[in-house]
Image (cartoon, rainbow, N blue to C red; front, side, top):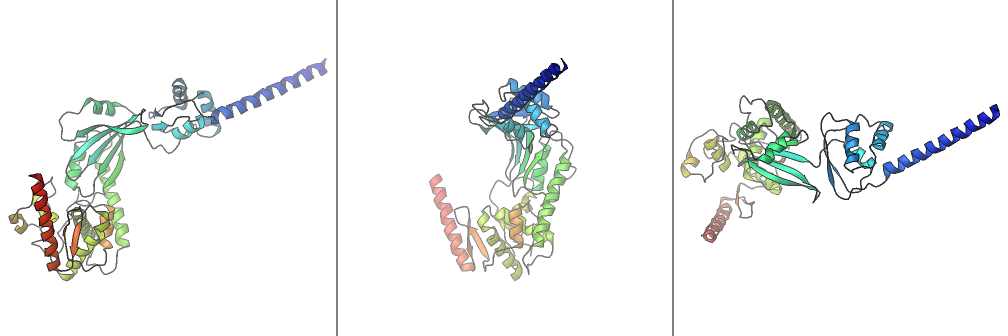
Length: 386
C-alpha cells in the first residue's frame, strides 16, 4: 500500500514538474513573441503609477497579451521597481519584453504631449506637440504667441494632463532680458526672477522642466551651464589672444553670435575682431550699437540711424575703443569657442554678401568693393519687391 502511495506521489510530482516546466516555457515564449499591435501606440505612465495597474491597462488595451507575464518577468528580472513616468512610443509588433524594457528604461519620453517654450531673438512662443497614431510621429498641434492674453483650449488641456512633458529652448543670441521675460510669461513655472541675469550668463539650448518648477532654479541651471562652457573654452584658448579674462572672451563671443548665424564662418568673424583689437582699431560692429539703443530689451525693429552710429553709449564700438563693458547677448558654445580659437587670417573687414554669409577683406579698398556689391544686391531686391 505504502509503495503504491509513494509511486502515485512521485508520479504526481513528475506531472507537476512537467506542467511547471511547460508553463515556464510557454511564459518565456509569450514574453519574447511578437505582439499583436498593428500600429504605433503611445503609452502614458503617470507619476506614482504601479506595475500592476499599468500592466492591467496594457492588457485591456491590447498592447500586450498578458499583464501577469509582464509582472512576473519584471519581478524575475529585478525591474519591478524601475517603472518610469513619461510617454513612451510602442512600435507595431512589440513583444511584452519590448514594452517592459521601454517603460523601465531611461525614462526619456518620445511621444504623448510636449509643451515647449521657444525663446528666440525676435519673439517667444509656446508649441504644443502631440503624438499622431496615424503617422507614428510627434506633430505640432498649436503654436501660441507668448504675448497673447488667452491660451487656446488645446494648451489648457495639455497642461492639465499629468503626463505632459515640458521643455524650454533658448536660441543663441537672445538677451537675458528676453529670457527672463519669456520665463515670466510661461505659466507652467512658478516663482519670480528678482532681477535680470547678467548679460551673457545664460547658456542657450534645451532644458527639461516640470510643472511647478521655480524660475530662479532654471536661471541658476542656465548660468551653471554657461559658466562650465566658458571655463572649458578658456582653458583651451589659443595663445597670445588680446583677451585678458573669461569675461572679455564672453563679450567677444556675444558679438560674434550677433554678427553671424553661419557656423562655418564664426572663427573667421572672430579673426576679424581679434585682428582689429591687436591693431588698436575700433570694432565698428552694428550689433553693439543696437544694444546701446535697446539695452537688450526687445528688438529694434528697424535699421540704424546715422545719429545712432555716432551716439556715445557704453556699447557703441564706433565710438569706444576695444570691447564694450558687457556682453550684448547670450552666446552659444560655438561662438564662445570661436572667440578663443579664431581662424588665422589677415582680415580686417566683412560685410553681408547676399547669401546669408559675409564677404571678408584685408584692405579697406577691397572692403569698399564688397560694400558696393552689397548695395547693388539691396537695390535689386528692393526693385523686385516693387
